[in-house]
Figure (cartoon, rainbow, N blue to C red):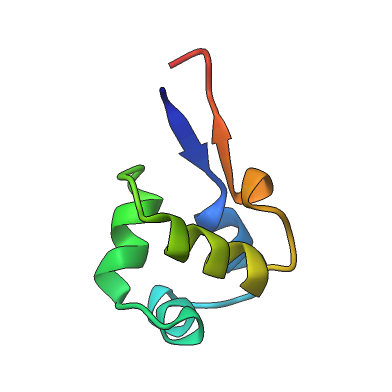
Length: 67
């Protein structure tokens, strides 16, 4: 399954750096960098991102059938 995410778009729309977002959700900057590069993350981090951005996990991570 190919997953895409909107983390970078959501983060930059709020004017946050990767470090600021990492601190806000309780992870490290490298985790945010990996997610933004398209690497997988754990479900806990996915839910913390969705909660932080006030949206559903499906709004942050979504299936991309074209890739």
